[in-house]
Image (cartoon, rainbow, N blue to C red; front, top):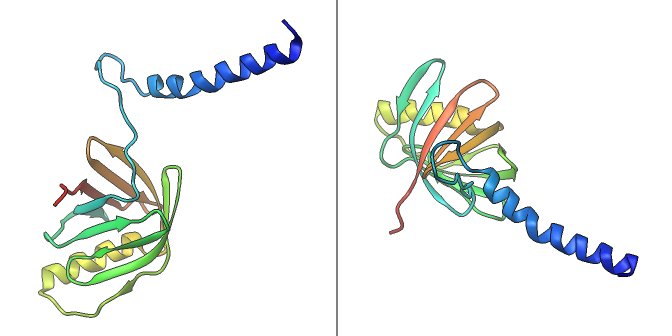
Length: 152
């Protein structure tokens, strides 16, 4: 077989096998299941809680987040709507400044809103997904816990 043709066959075989190797590489030892990396963008996420300064802050039911493929984040901080630029690279999301509406709500929702806004605004967060859950941790150690919302 000529040398050029042999290289092409080798490259084609390698290109076909790499996705299989990556998929098999996500297998958990002893679990019998394959861990699939879930998309972060294009998903409606419900904010469950924020862990900040060592305290767990439960989210009001209205707290939501969505990042579209174009780099726009939007949602609800607990009382007010927000939007921001968001850059997703691998397992990191960098949020720009948040733009929010200015409604007033009861004290618990406003307190949660300030905590969530501090965890996101201008921060780079490392994300981890697992079985419909997402945890995003910023450089200060604050963690935002989210759950994939069911389709409506």
